[in-house]
Length: 147
Image 1 (spheres, helix red, strand yellow):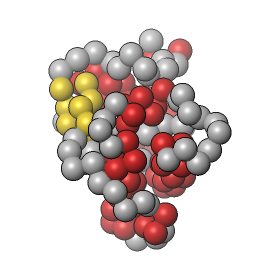
Image 2: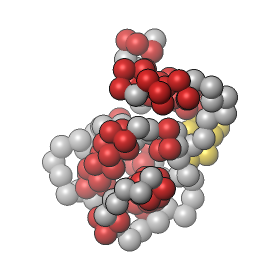
Image 3: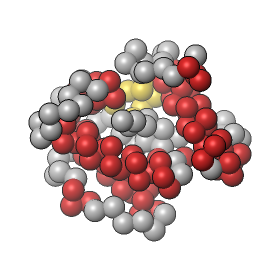
Image 4: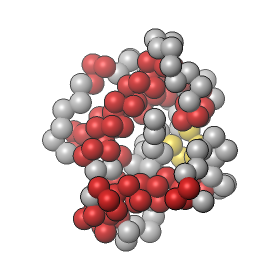
């Protein structure tokens, strides 16, 4: 499961669809509707806010907004009717890690998008997040490619 802090506009089609599915899974986990993934590290920051269900609902709305921009139809009826009414902090180190992680995926999957994104100097965030100074998040599972 990967719930990106970076803006969903950076994702290729495969990544955006996967993010939608994983976001819906995360919503079910946070609502207690599934037995698996309860302790998945990607959910730590959602669980840390006052209204985790509202946070994941806002997150999914941001993903659906990007889908709309691309002419895709993600069923918004699957998103619960709650809101966080706030932002979740994400560190500069986490944002950099995720962006580089995505670039590694795109290098193989979508070389054209990879080339375009390599010129990015200021990384946009998913609308649910605000950036704060700091290292990569301690909950992040680091792959060998990004050490």
